[in-house]
Length: 292
Ligand SMILES: Nc1ncnc2c1ncn2[C@@H]1O[C@H](COP(=O)(O)OP(=O)(O)OP(=O)(O)O)[C@@H](O)[C@H]1O
Image (cartoon, rainbow, N blue to C red; front, top):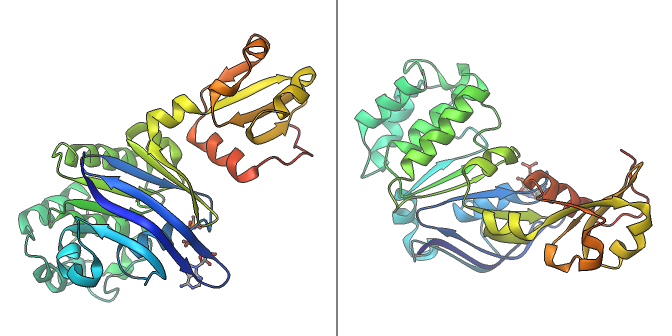
């Protein structure tokens, strides 16, 4: 299994915020989701991959190459959907296309118009007059029309209605039928990733919490619920995040194998959702707990 992206020990210091020695891979043939709370560093990470930000330390390889020596080729091979509109707002979809398309050697005009039709986009409309969802669809059409090997998207689904969101997820799966391609996207809608992602990279406060196969994460982590009587026993274990409830406690453990066998009968042990993994990791082990 080949990595189409390798991020190794990358750091970037903005003063108030920094990416701290992050490393992860994006694998060819798979969908990797990037999750993390607001301000965790998702967009910054994506901008580093796109060479829109200079990194302070570390190395980023895309298709075995680096931006320092091969940025033009790398960008040819990526379809990028930014979280900000980076097209000409005053111009129409059609005029934007005419300016940008010649940059791509593999541009496919038929595919572009097919996507416009599929996404219900009016070619003659000025970009500034498009709705938020339409802007994302336009960015998608531009990103997909040059048949990229790697699709990188920064929160593409956040402004989309649930119907189109589902269609987009199906479209991504269809694109992935070609095993040479890869998709990497950030999102707060973790249920989308539960549906379609193969790998999850979780970033919190500029650090990678994990970057792993989704199934492995779901098998490894556990939500443990129990009565107060077992509270002391469980707090002796390696607990990621913890909260007291009216009836007892609920916590997230990194490794379900660590739950002592003598306690297993008395506790409810469940598979977590990605949202629960994020929630407890960010919340941590605050002792006061919130009653739910
Ligand atoms: N150019 C910059 N100069 C200084 N600080 C920056 C710059 N870009 C981002 N930051 C800071 O870096 C931190 C991480 O921002 P980033 O946009 O990467 O987070 P995010 O995980 O994408 O968040 P969100 O989910 O809210 O979109 C924030 O505190 C932000 O203010």
